[in-house]
Length: 114
Length: 113
Image (cartoon, rainbow over all chains, first blue to last red; front, side, top):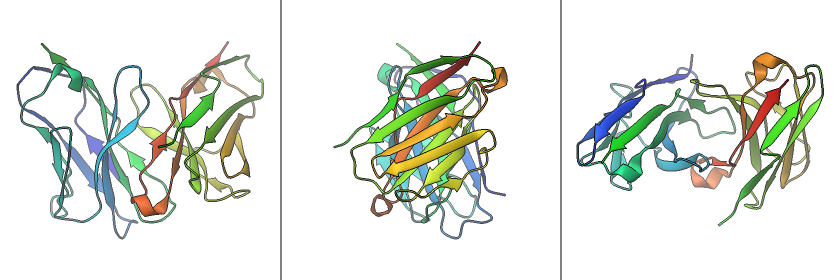
């Protein structure tokens, strides 16, 4: 089936350390998967962080990067140096070009310690 | 920019009661969605609608009804509230030209007493 698996939280890192949140997907019924990272900051709604709709491409936003790797079916989220303001819950998601379902991971809660 | 407004933020009802959540968007998006989020789990699709008066069932539609009478609004009814379905309900909208990016409301929490 179609699904997303991501790093189980909570994850705690110190400010200025590097971060990687793993995400792998299974897209058996989706011909052209689109991949997304959404984020929920404390007190705010869920919002798009970055997306990539073409295999092999990289998306970036707010210092975060993720590369769509079709061979390893992965879309890991990375940041070289995290800030306290990055503390949030991060969701990896899989979708397609149509009006169909999006598949979300369970979310990874990140706390950055100053 | 636009906004998605969900009402109410907290919905408290009794077991067996019919309860309705409302969602309004001013993005002029065609597609709207209702997701349910349980603690420690990902979002699961309840219903979506690709245009006014259209309804499509998601993986979790049993026990719910939905209504899309206008392009800008999408409501979700819990037909008989149960204590094991206390969760956060998220409304979202999307337009195909944006790569199907979802735009979310802030969520409505259902509490069943």
